[in-house]
Amino acid sequence: MGSFPGFQKETRVSPSRPAAVVVLAAGAGTRMRSATPKVLHAMGGRALLGHAMTAARAVDPERLAVVVRHERERVAAYVAEADPSAVLVDQDDVPGTGRAVQCALQRLDAEAATDGALVVMAGDTPLLDGETLAALVEAHAGSGNAITVLTAHVDKPFGYGRILREGEQVVGIVEERDATDAQRAITEINTSTYVFDAAVLREFLGGLGADNDQGEVYLTDVVAAAHGRGLPVRALTVDDPWTVEGVNDRVQLAALGAKLNDRILARWMRAGVTIVDPGTTWIDVDVELAPDVTIRPGTQVHGNTVVGQGAEIGPETTLIDCEVGEGARIVRAHAELAQVLPGGSVGPFAYLRPGTVVGERAKVGTFVEVKNSTLGTGSKVPHLSYVGDADIGAGTNIGAASVFVNYDGVNKHRSTVGENARTGADNLFVAPVTVGDGAYTGAGTVLRHDVPAGALALNDFGQKIIDGWVEKKRPGTPAAKSAAAARGATGEERPATGDEAGPSANDPGGAGTDGTETSVSEGSRR
Ligand code: UD1
Ligand code: CA
Image (tube, rainbow, N blue to C red):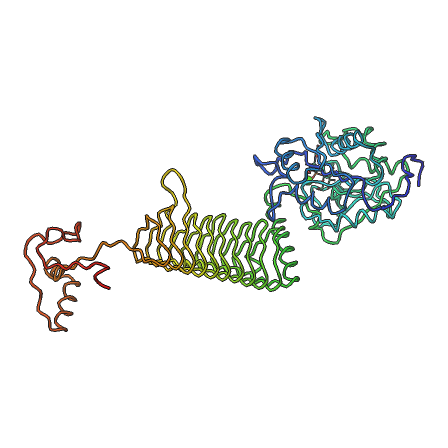
């Protein structure tokens, strides 16, 4: 075991529960060429740092520390929001991963002595999952190792630290830029994920120099130092190198994002979800899908979306933070912060905005936009409409091409339509307005006033007929020919029409014409 005194530690009640996980997130990430810090770039709907913190939490550490420096305020704000109990550690202006861990240990020790296993991981390795991290922690716990390093064998080790071995002992880690040609030929790489005995870090970190190509304090140098004192350092090697791949630029961001998506899709397919075309389907990490959901091609399911059993989503649909009930169907739609209750139907070509609730078996049809509105059970808005800030009762049908006029230019107002109402096509609901239960409205009605339950509302504009107008005022046109033919077929005479002042194109109502007019009001037709 060697002579290092602090290493002999008492047996922990739960040997595999680490004292701390330290996530390194202080680096600049210059190769991203971004105003956004690298660790805040996202994949699968979660920042890189969020992936690391999620994996860290999976091994149930007593404390979780995140080291910050570059873009400190933004990264710190993210950490505080994602996990308020995480300890924020500020790295000083001494650069390097070794310094980052030293700062973390000092900060943790100032709170309470850190004793036992301390996991270090990078904030830019998003596919490193909790299971892999737990396996590393387990391997360390049973081993008597001073350090256990997570390694991988890769075809192209360029850029990574190489693992130097003597048999099963890891004797050092050398960075690409400091390596000899022979060392560069080594294909076993350092993943930047380790379990250290805290006392080992405390002993050796302070003595590290920065005598390397980057002039940084390298955490990797602790390995050679510990080995030099006879302490055992061993490796756990991952089977799938993707798991430990880091993001340094946006090419890797996209490649790892695609890999993450593949994993998410495979997990859902194994759990009973049909994904018709995995190549064009994107599902975020926090989405929840029930068995027998079908996802059709070209669909993205984002955020905290939850989809119930048997629902069918897509093709070409985007859902962001939505709740979709059992058996619902959503076709070619874009929806955010919307709820579609069981059996609801949306699309094709629909836009559901925040606050939309599509009731059970209710329908939002084609070219319909809905915002901050509720459709009751079985109600329908089938065609070409905008429903904004409205509550529509159960069993109601909103006629095609209707608009809830919710905005008076200054304020938004709500409107209400009761249950089992039938509103005509091309209605304008000028908010705030209430249409009672079971009411009807005529086609083309502008609803400026409330409609009592069971009433019919319409705007009695009447309809003016000017017989023979087309043949007289648009002679020779196809319309006039058809009109003449229609009259001939029924044996009618061409109606007499005044020669002057017919209705102009600008005045189709024909005010001032001396043609034969009939005025029909809705009332007189019934
Ligand atoms: C590091 C390892 C290398 C390993 C590789 C795996 C060292 C010296 N090298 O190299 O052996 O193969 O990761 O991806 O550790 N960071 C800080 N403070 C700093 C510098 C970095 O917190 O002063 C953080 C970064 O934000 C990042 C992580 O540490 O999350 C790794 O830093 P990076 O500069 O990417 O290290 P590599 O050169 O990739
Ligand atoms: Ca890196």
